[in-house]
Image 1 (tube, rainbow, N blue to C red):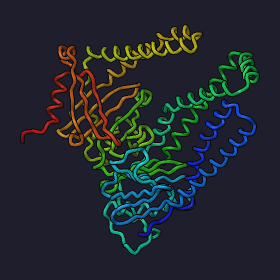
Image 2 (cartoon, one colour):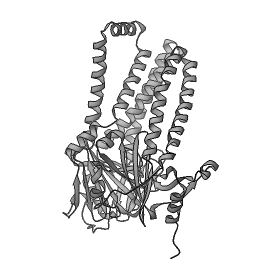
Image 3 (cartoon, rainbow, N blue to C red):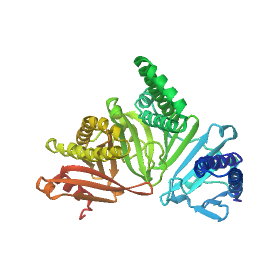
Length: 491
């Protein structure tokens, strides 16, 4: 196939990416110029130089688009890019882990989409191949070559069409999605952004205007001020709620042969494909709010980096499902997954205090460090922060207790291991096939050996690196049984 250029909307995306860098350059330049106290003549020359530099950046974006070419051939996808150094990337189909199809709303009228091709050998979060705006038929052609389906060499890309086939499908329940969106902790970033805006406004606004605003706030009645805070929090919750709804709008999980396809999104329609055999483990995740609502998020740990929502190295298979039905729903899609919730071996009740102790000591050290920094920078707030210590320590001990109650393991079958942990008020249950485990390790201190306790660490392949799952303070005999289960038998 003759190399082709990306569709013209890709040029707008290249320019947008450059524009983001330009904004950063302008902010840094204005900050430096304000600190240098240059003469009027030098200031004018600096502004002229900055304008020329920005124009060059946009020209380079156009050149980058012009130099970008791709080709889809029977043996793989070839991408040529680079301005001064020509880079040619060839991706064989048998090395592809996942393919992400993303379609922003403005690409739909032109039947275009963006493709991200990922392999296990990638070294960053962008994937080996990114095609920003190509016809949807290109993605269809790549998928056909990838799965060994026949393709007529005489057909152009625009003539490649999907053939109807039988597929297993599951769409998430609208009621569950609403509960999932409401229980999202996305309000936390909103509050942090508001705090950042206030801090920057405090520094950038003239002192006279800032004093006037603060005077108005002080003059407000307590009820009005509380009402204003409540309105801001409600708006933050609404923004978080709507963001989750549009992200997982019409989420659909499908399986054709051994290929899983996840489709979702309103403003950006996102489709990700992954082969069942590429999945290293399946993770069921719940924060404490979703535990109360009996809802779980199901993710797949893969050797690719297809996930971008909960964690970068995980792929969301189902954003929300009833916890009691999660295994039964997923079993038809992932054939090695059981249909029932496993019976777990938890940490002994008499050993759970270790988690609260460790959490308390860790938070105590962090509080001491923060107090020292406050005493150094803003000593007038030291007393107030010291008075808040009991609250933070109560949270620390509660977190330790939560972790101890949710830490467990189980050997479900001769081929499946289940690991459950609790951290930051979030429970994670990971089901991993024996053949996907890279190593199993145990660790004991001298004191733990006397108490017949041990830590279990299971090493998996996840993203572009390894992932260790550690289950702490288990009975030493349980850890020994798992190591014996993992080692190959004499037969």
